[in-house]
Length: 483
Image 1 (cartoon, rainbow, N blue to C red):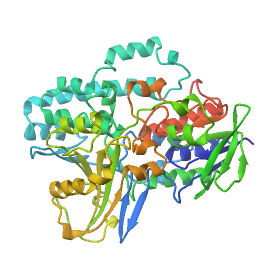
Image 2 (spheres, rainbow, N blue to C red; image 1 turned 135 degrees about the vertical axis):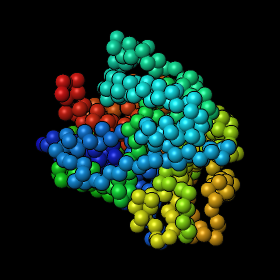
Image 3 (tube, one colour; image 1 turned 90 degrees about the horizontal axis):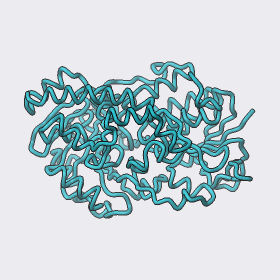
C-alpha cells in the first residue's frame, strides 16, 4: 500500500486525503493547530460563535463533485442554505441596496434604487458573465499545467479572444452599467482575492457571476462544518488526522519527497508528500532551497478582523452586509497602490445568527467585521485598529456600552498561521500569478506536491477543492484521461 503524508488539514489537505484514502492509499494528515480547517476556523466565547475566516460559499459544483466522487451525498453531511438576499449594500451616498441572485428581484431593485435605464445593462452583463464562466472553468481552471504551452492551445486562445479575458474588469463593467454604485457592486468581488477591481482582468468577472448568478450559500452550523465534514469522510475512508502536530520540514532524498520530520524530531517516511500550506511559506520554510524560495511573489492585501459580542438587536443588518467607502476609488488607491490603511475603508459584516440563532445569546448579535488592509509590507494595521473600529461603530450604528467584547485578528496573526507577509488571501491573482504562471501543484521534487489557495487554480474554497482534484489526479496518474 502506497503511503501519503499530508502537511496541513485545511480544505485542500482534507479533500486530498479523502480522495487518496478512497483510492486505497494509506494517508496521514498532520495539522499544527488544535482544529482542522486552516483559515476556515471558528471562535467561541461567552455563548457566541463566530466563523473566523470565510463566511460564505459560492460555486457549489467542486464540493458536490468531491462528495459524488466519494459516493457520498452532500445532504447527509451538510445542510446548505441559500442566503437570499445575498447581502445588503450600504453605499457611501446613503443608498441601501439588497443584492440577490433572483434576476427578477434584482432588476426591480436596480430600477427602484438606482435607475430603470440600468436594467438592460445588468441583464447583458449577467448573460455575458454566464457564458464566460461556463467556458473558462473547464478550459482554464480545472486543468493541469506543465508548461506555458498548455495555456496557449488554439482552443484556449480562441476563448481568450472571444471573451476578451485579458481586458480590464473595471472598465468593462462600466460599459454595461454607468452608475458608479453598480460599477462597484459588480466588480468589488475581486477583493475576495486581495486584488483591486481596477487592476483585475475581465476574466475575474466570473466571481460576480458566481455570486449573482449561482448565489451565496452557507452551511447551517457555520462554515467550520465544511472542513469537519470533509475530515469525517477522510477518516471514514481510513485516513488518520493528527492535530497539534507541527511538521518541521519535508525530507528530500535523491530529488524525491520521502517523508517529513515533525517538530518533535520524529521522522515519518512516505511515498508521497502533499503540502497544504501557503506556497511562499512552503518553499521558504518546509522545502530545501530552490529558485521558488527566492521568488518575490506579489501577495494579496490582508484583513483586519473584529469579532464583537453585541448585546442588542441590529435589525437593519442581514446575514451578509457590505459597506462601501464614500470614495471607493480613493479607498482602492490607498490600499492597493499606496499600501496604506484606508482613511475611509470599505468593509464587510456578517451576522451568522440570522441563519443560526444559537450563534448568539437571545437578543444579542455575533458581529463579524472584515476590513481589507495592507499586508505586512505596508502600513501596520495594528496602529490604525482603534480608528478603523471607530469607523465601523459609526457606520453600523453601534453603541459602545452594548459591545460585550471585541476580539481582534491582525495581519500579524495571519502570518502566524503560515500566510506569508500576513496576506490573508494568499498570493494575488495578477496575470503572472494565474493559470500556468501560478505555482503548480507539482513541486520541483518528485512525489512532492502543493495543494491550496496559493497554488493552481487559485484562491477560495471552490478553487482549493479543485486543487485537491489536480493533486489526486497527479498521484493516481489519471490526469489527462477522459472521464
